Image 1 (cartoon, helix red, strand yellow):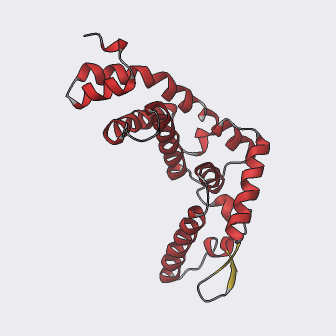
Image 2 (cartoon, rainbow, N blue to C red):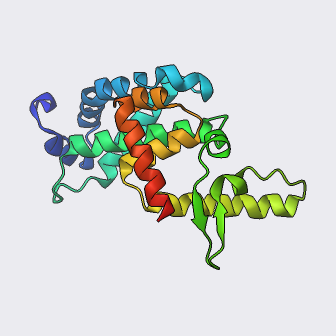
Image 3 (cartoon, rainbow, N blue to C red):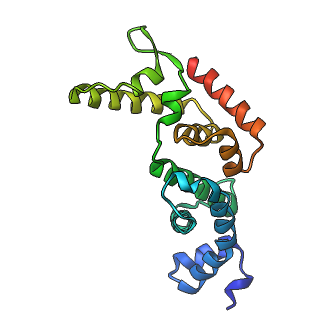
Length: 199
């Protein structure tokens, strides 16, 4: 049987039936997509301490994940599932490894929010708190992460990607290049993010 003549769903079937050859073909088939997505971020990697090979490795892990969790009965192709998973894993890796993780939030994004008691506050003020009391630092860190999580719950996948990269210290042009979008679409996404967070 020649696995190269099979479509993704057939390859996954054989992979689930323990065919290493089918798995190797699927990985080779999606390697150009992984490389294209990884090299798209090449210019912003200097801020993260990562290399393109790290992103390629993350893309390979995404394919493994997709093989395990792809459900052909859902109305989505394997290609779309893989492409989305690769993007998400690469952006998460970049965000986690960014040395300036909250730089943009501290310096530029002062979203006004309201806590559960109805008190108004600015998200950037909480995150940039440089208190020397370790207990306060831990409480503020937990609060910041909770606030960011709540904010992200209101956003689309694309807006979450833009938000994560902006929080990691990347500028409009870098985000646009990384996500293969125009700077104007990034600006529009940031405006929608601000609007949604203020709701």
